[in-house]
Image: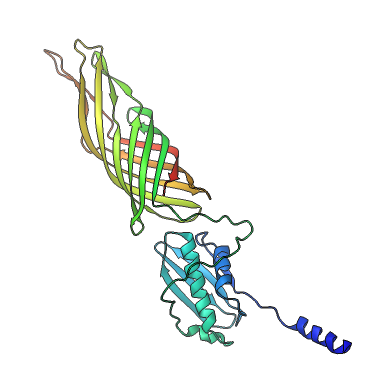
Length: 307
């Protein structure tokens, strides 16, 4: 009996262990660890033909490729979802569906496989060591920032607040921002003018990358309200004038595991119509001082995902 048990144990140790497919990814959204974790909950069989899977993310699409050590290769291209968790689940479903239909012959990869009609709910998986699970990206956020501004008249500073609605139409969202510059002063003839131009901007925004670090771009119209107050003249007046312009910029944001995001932004304000501060002098030509028509602003800020 002892000899039989020892032989059985030897046979069991000689059996090859189940080998999971090697998963790699060129992006952290989804990361290889996320796809592997979700694949473990969908498929637990052996790895026929020593299959390796690679996930490649491009703008607007995600490609899942399966390669064997023999010769067969298969790939499937899917539209990218906004959330990294949904991308990882979709990639794991593709890999699992291929593995379920494969035989020991890796040429079985050449047989097309249909995706399941409904995506099942995510199974309970372990969080890989060293990986930070990001929450699903919110649809509405509030933010604030501080900017340094440079234009033809010199440098200035601005404060801003924004409300952003994400993914209103596919990848595109809207952001409404209020920019409050510090008042500035310039000479006009014998006196000076103190001017202030707060701006209300509406931008169409879309993410260019996904993951922990998000790069997005935005462009849209801007409305400015110019407030000018004279000083040192025979008669000091205060005037208001509206101005229409455009804004465009890029933002690099870092998402943490909480609802907070921190970002750096570079944007430009353009005012197509020229605006001048004018001082009329009896018996002589009026004094004119032109306001800047292009402003470049660079700043830091934060956003809070409200829901």
